[in-house]
Image 1 (cartoon, rainbow, N blue to C red):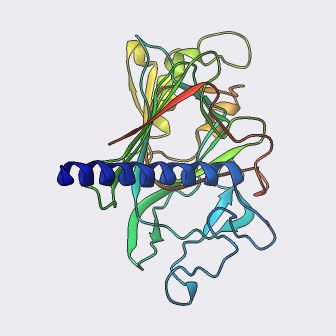
Image 2: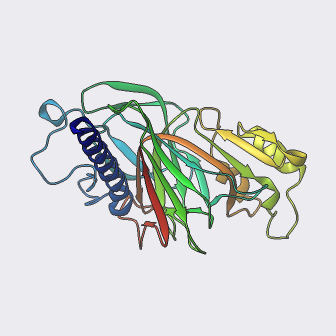
Image 3: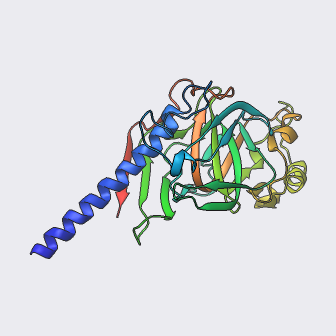
Length: 288
């Protein structure tokens, strides 16, 4: 009996820790960078005596993107990273339904970057990417799962299932940019069939498949209308290529991003306007 009680108590503590970690994740999204002049992130570097390694020198410096091309805003955040690798995924809906939309997809630097974790370890071969106005489609299931770097042998999984017309969003709204540090095998699949050329309501057709290949993506699906982009292979900025044709929005068929850090902000590196994170009528489940 004692063993059962202890096990249940331990599980409750683990779930509480996992939920606290999720709320911390949400706080980074909601608060974004504070005090752009000093370049510190409110959620990443709280106003306490806490230090990240000896002399606070185990922080990672990340210049924030403007959300377009390789340009940065002039603001740098300095988070203390735990080294936990999490996976953000949106489950594909029935059939060929799109699961999310973004207005910009940017590889901020074509070269891989390294991060320093709180214990002084270095993780290399990562990529700094940015999205603008990332909006998850209604009724899709979003998962954020810890896949590496926790003491638990079983991944903690946060499942978010919207109920109704509104959906959980990451960086939704005008001038909201989400910066992420991701692994090279992080991937999104863009639905090229929904792209119109120059506002003429003409399907992008074979041009889209060629453009997909030019930026390092892999065409697939019916008539090559699915463009699967792995961020290690992505060359340049999709927006630069497509904006000349009047494209202002990308529909995504699938999302699978493995990240060590993310933060939302505006194009100038200040706090994200409005509500950068919202979960209206959303069921949140934590396992185990």
